[in-house]
Picture (cartoon, rainbow, N blue to C red):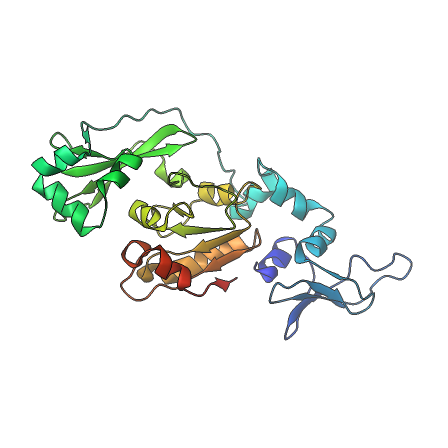
Length: 298
């Protein structure tokens, strides 16, 4: 949680000390109020302590008191209030609904053992990326032999069981762009959820690509890029998401992950980042090695 960003956003007067941000205590007795800035909100996110009335507790509690209940309502409202939307851009509204559109998969066939035996280029790619046929079948992966997107894996992307997009990955590793999406589908509005994913997992890892989620299993979601859209940020603020979210973007996106985590931590608790070794991503490292990396909480 970025306490200073929250205080600035709600225009709460404060002073900065070595270990805390000091504010006027909202829980001191009304007949004996805090006329100074004696309530410390600890920078390590461990809570607060009023040095006058001796009240202690969580940051969520004190921020809710400081904002007259607005802070808690914004975080708990499943629909996300207009106020929280305007945090991103006070001049504009975020449109939650997009124009109606339909998505169909390109001409392709399911990936099977028989198909791989006929297509060396497909078999070689799957072996190189350590992707099993069982994984392809689990995620309903298809292979485009010809047509507009030849020699690409076609990976369906669903949201609440509705097909909202697909990704086409070149299996020759020679064609650019390496990844293609249907141009009319607002992929930046969504995440990729792997099979068996539970939004209330204790910790959720945000990774960049679909292959990263496959390697991480049901504890990761893919953002498709090195930044979060406003729509994606809103999804992470809803109550049914995990209490802890960790950015695990590729090693070359560490700086971007810090920026994204800072933005998100000003709106919710439990946001962290990990730094992957140079040249690595979750797909290349594997789940066990990624989970060994130390999490830095914002």
